[in-house]
Length: 335
Image 1 (cartoon, rainbow, N blue to C red):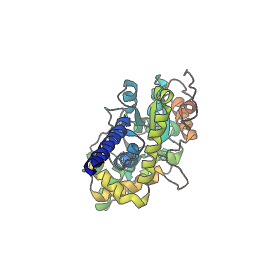
Image 2: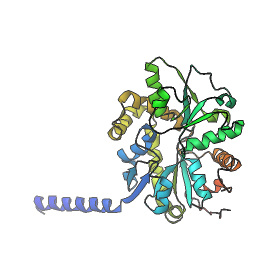
Image 3: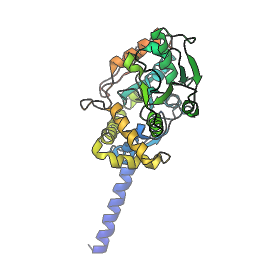
Image 4: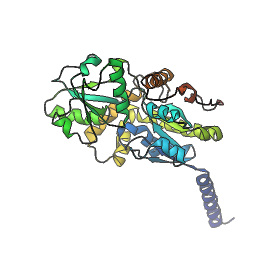
């Protein structure tokens, strides 16, 4: 065989092989709960570093927002996987949604409240009385704070409630005392800003007072898990590999570089601090495997929501927490 013919043959075989591999890539849509920043470092890294591609998946990782709810998109068929907090999942199940939880990303809930240290420290829930408290109406912080009030016997007459959005001006002007933040994103930004002005701060974490709500977890539809368990397993394995790599301090520079490509509005110093803060929430202990579902915390979240009449029926959440995808799942009908 002539050398030129041999080269052409090799090239053809390469192209056929490449085309075949590309054709086998499964396309998926993955809707996050919020915007691109250090809070979703593992999601970004799994895509950017080829963990999805290595599993034969082409995953479109999409930002979330109040208008782009992962649960709604799963039900409409616009997303194959998504991220939602426990209260969102439980509320949706109460309304008849057919969804399951396949991993819990945050082991510690980042939803907390920031307040200035020139105010008395909140050492017991009753210390919230008399304060002006910010709440995002319709947000999961409203659910959490309402639970705090119920547990402490605090009525709306005991506090001043101020509806908040994304403008921190009322907090900076001290018109609102206690402001809701994600500890690893807005919390870092506000703390840095107040530090520069010589103001010290505290964070109020409801979990310190026994109010535990599970945060960001990975969800999919019951149909997807029943009909395509192998694909669900591939997706989850690749995603968690991305998260493990992203939370490894040895990869910090590379992770920050990938986040920066999608989050250019945050400066490098803040972004690095956000990543460090995220690490403590995702993997608070080296012994914790990322993705571990804290079944007791989910049960407590459901118990609190039912007790405080935030849902009409018990949803038996434990039956919707999938610890082993390869194990056959039998779904029970809800009340």
